Amino acid sequence: MNQQIAVDDALGLFVPGSAGSPEGLATLTKLAISQTIPFLSMLVESCQTGRVQKMDVTAFCSLADFGNATDFKALCDQYGSDKARSHNYHYLYAPILRARDKVSAVLEIGMGTNNTDVVSNMGQYGRPGASLRAFRDFLPNALIFGADVDRRILFEEERIKTFFVDQTVLDSFRALGEGIPPAMDLIIDDGLHAPNANLAVLLFGLKRLKVGGWLVVEDIPPQAIPLWEVVSAVLPQTFKPYLIRTAAAMVFAVERLG
Image 1 (cartoon, rainbow, N blue to C red):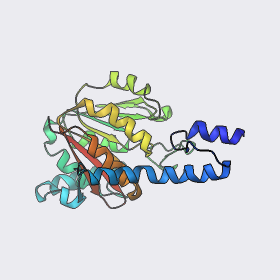
Image 2 (cartoon, helix red, strand yellow):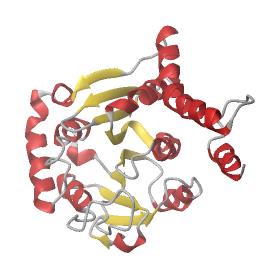
Image 3 (tube, rainbow, N blue to C red):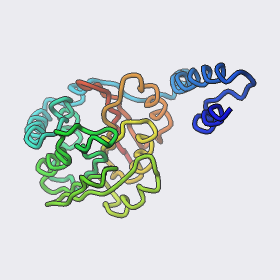
């Protein structure tokens, strides 16, 4: 009975409101968890409200942007970021940050902790803040902000400032919001890589984008695509969403149009 109460409390959204054995209800609860988002995605498609554009990252990056992509890759490799090594995100950020001299503010949530007692760590040989430094050098006039749940890796140096944030606690975004500019060119979620954490970043970040600004959610597994199709369908028309295939994962990117 106590086990059933614990399941009801934690997964109440998905537990059938029916009588039955604990084992049977547990099986149906797992099924509900696995089917709910895909079925929502199918509903979106059937209503013809889905509007996310899907493409490969190399198609997203035009020939005119390849020089910037090469420059950003070199900086990522120099500082030890996996954005261009394990992934090919340099083809993503080159077009997004095409006007390099005009970008003024970038935020990345998830700084790559090397403390292995933290979930979603980069391993003991990770280099916290590597991509922040790459963005700083790539964008000569921008202030770069980072945030992470691991307070031990927070730091401050030339044009970089970092803050604590716990993506599973919405209130923790309040202090972060007070420390960064109200209008951002780019906000990146490279943190916990869980749907609730991703949605928390969207709730925080979409209203802080400049017109022409972007929000990017990295490292999305293919099985999570239905969630992002649903998210795309409910976004206001002032946002243009993309699902982009990269070397190792999908990326959700959304541009603020107005």
